[in-house]
Length: 399
Image (tube, rainbow, N blue to C red; front, side, top):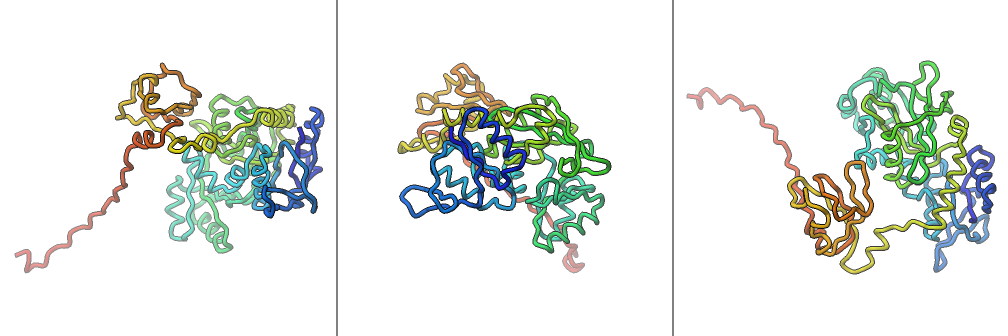
C-alpha cells in the first residue's frame, strides 16, 4: 500500500508514529505538507499537484488537518476522495467535527447523550439560554477552540453574561453548556478506529482547573470502559462520518455524555497511558479498507430509475408492529431491508423471523413509490396561542 500522511508537523509524535507503523508493516509512506497541494480542476479528471508537480498515485491518505487550515485542508481531502483515494476521515466528517455547533446538532439528532447546550446571538436571549441549560455555573465554549482554549467556566449568571457579551462584541460565536458537576476536572478519551474502541484513558485536571486537556497539564491513566461508553464513542464517530476519532466523554450520573469528537486525535498521551500500538491499529484498518473498500450504498443502489434507499420508521400504530419481517409484505412490495436499528442496537441483514417493534427504523432498498407510501403525512406543529386576559367592560356596557 502506498500511503500519504497529510501533516504540517512532520516531526510531531503522532505523525512520526503513524509513519513508523506503516514502514514496519512494509508499506510505502510519505509525509506531505497539506498547504503545498494545488487542486487542479482544469483536466477531464480531478487531479492534485504537489510542490508544482503532478501528484503520483496513492492508495490511501491519513489527514492530520489542523484547526487553522480546515477549509483548505478539507478541500484537499475532498479532491483525494474524488480521485478514489481512501481516507478514513472524509472532508465532510472533518468539517462536521471541527464546528462544535454543527457537531452538536448532528449528534443530538441521533439521540447521543450530551450536556444540555444552547446557542444564541442576541443579548436579550442570553439569560433565558442559561436558565434552559440549568443555570449557573455554565460552560462557555468558542465554536472553533482546541486543546481547551476558548472554554470558560462562568460561576454566576452575571459573569456569564459579561463574558458572552464581550465575546459577541468581537464577532465570536459561543455555545452555552450545562456544567456537569459530578465530572468536574475529569473526562474519558476513547480512541475509535473503524467500529471499535482500541484504547481509552481518563484525563484528570490539575488543582482547581476544570479542563482536563493534557496540553493544560492534565494527567492521564489507562481505563477499561464499559460497553455503554464504547457504544456511545463508536456511534458518535460513525454518525460524524469518521473512522478514526478521539471521542471525549464526561462521566455523568446517568452514563456517558459526549462532549466532542476529534477528527485528528493526538496519539502521544493515549499511547503513553495505555502502552498500546494505536498507530499500528490505524494503519491496519486503512490497509483492510484499501483491500476491501466500503461503498456508499445511497450512490451505488440508487442508479436504477424508480429505486433507491430510504429509512422506514415502524410507528406504534402501524400494522407492522408485532409482525415477523418475513410476514410484513415488504418483500412482495419489492422492498429489501438492509439493516434494522432498534434503539442503539443495529441488526444487519435481519432474518425473516425478526419481529418488528414500535420505534424500529428499517434501512431499505426498493421501489421509492412503495416506500414513500409507507411514510405517514407530516403533522404540522400547532402554535400555542396565549389567551390574553379579558379587559373589564366599561361601566356603561356592564349595565
